[in-house]
Amino acid sequence: MLRNRTTLSQFLLEEARRHESSTGEFNALILDVALACKAIMRQVSYGALAGLHGAAGQTNVQGEQQQKLDVVANELFLHATEWGGHVAGMVSEELDEPYRIPAAYPKGTYLLLFDPLDGSSNIDVNVSVGSVFSILRAPTPGQDARLEDFLQPGTEQVAAGYAIYGPTTMLVLTVGRGVHGFTLDQTVGEFFLTHPDMTVPPAATEFAINHSNRRFWEPAVRRYVDECLEGRTGPRGKDFNMRWVAALVAEAHRILTRGGVFLYPRDSKDPSKPGRLRLLYEANPVAFIIEQAGGRASTGRGRVLEVTPTDIHQRVPFVFGARDEVERIEAYHAERYDDDNLDLPLYATRGLFRDAN
Ligand code: MN
Ligand code: MN
Image: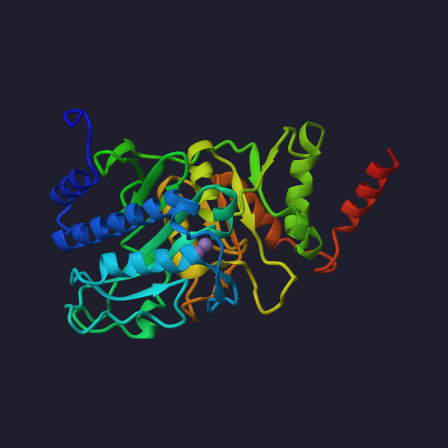
């Protein structure tokens, strides 16, 4: 069994031998993150048996209901990674401020940013959830990170990954040289390389968007989705299927495996939130993975990885997946529309014509 399999630690060691830029410290950090993910998988899989279903009775800095498992997963992430001397500070979806490494531990050369439990509203209905993380270099290694140290564009990421807790638990990772997927063997307790060199299939026939927000969308997004819905007889000349898991990690994993495009675009639902997903620990790591897999990740108006962050919890519009689809969506955003709150007159007319049939 071990003869034909590569473990995560073996993979990291071989990468480090091939590329002098990788260090033992970096590998140790990834293995600590993998340990956190295994511990979270365990809690998730115990479900109601562990008494961890349901709401924690408090809201996080995003104003969202925290689930009990959000709180537990956050603590597992912190405690698996704080002691090793590899990180100088952390940012978590569940923490208002950056996490200071306890004084007892040395400060390292990396910053770790994470959403410890993504899609946690799926927990009680037993649908896949995940964890997603981004690793940056600390500007002042060995010292406590300051808040502004985390405000680096996604292009500066040295690694990113996610774990998905589904029928199998997988860890999907990029260190800037492709995307590689590992499957957890729960009896051995190891991640084994099962999906080397993952790529986003170029031809998309699936799109994922929360269609109930249609009335809040910009014209470019309405146009794109309407064209997909028109199928074989519409301008795209082919039929599309629609998908929506409402969990970023699960959506990203499907797109990496089967292709397609995901949109959580800018909308007018809540003007204080120009997008839904968080830049530093959701959009950036997923964008890095998708680009490394040959896809594209955009705000609709430009590359996500080039957005300069201004706040550790800021949100961005997020469109990612097959390169051609994302470029088409960007081109639609670049066009002028008569009124930002209305479809193109052309489309309104065609819509009426369709209804009349
Ligand atoms: Mn999330
Ligand atoms: Mn979360």
